Length: 250
Figure 1 (cartoon, rainbow, N blue to C red):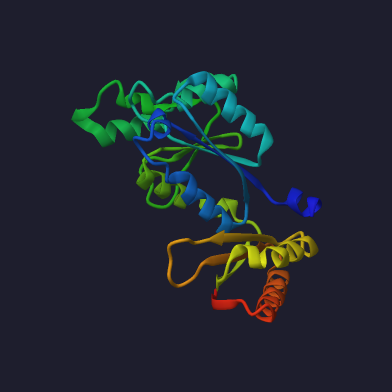
Figure 2: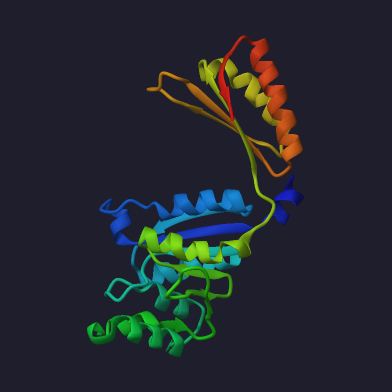
């Protein structure tokens, strides 16, 4: 299993913003990216939420850059005083912060007579950064090494990721779900035995206390679709033998 895990690209997600930590804004970008990665194949290993602090941003992103195959940041890339993500990453990587001619030209054309010096801050990138175009993007994605710098606004975050997502495609996870009317304690031993015998299949159990249609959802995930199907079939057979009510299978 360790060898298989090592071959799967790993992902670290850094969500940046005081507004997230204060609860004024709910983070939806990390949940969206986790779902996308599950479909594409890479394994999300860590998600952190940090404040708009240059030292914390720089050290966190730089550390993630060494630990994971790809790093995605969310937030801190606009024209205001707290948008310090790009500068923090440049400093941590020992890069100069420069105005990219292509970005500056695009910003000038977009804002025209509304342009301010603050708008031009969005043309600043770490020296050596790459711009990725694609899809419906007006402004490209900024990437440095294995770091992809994305905005915090959910609509823009999704638009920018959609333009680059195909470069992250790997062997996807195969998912099966079974919905039960039972108590978790009744099936706990069976799930433990199934997980112990199939260590490359991730088994999850999720109780639902306020639903009428089911009380427990059990999920099985793995890279080997044939193995997941076999384990799923065996588990359902064992649940039926225990006379556990299966509401539906997905």
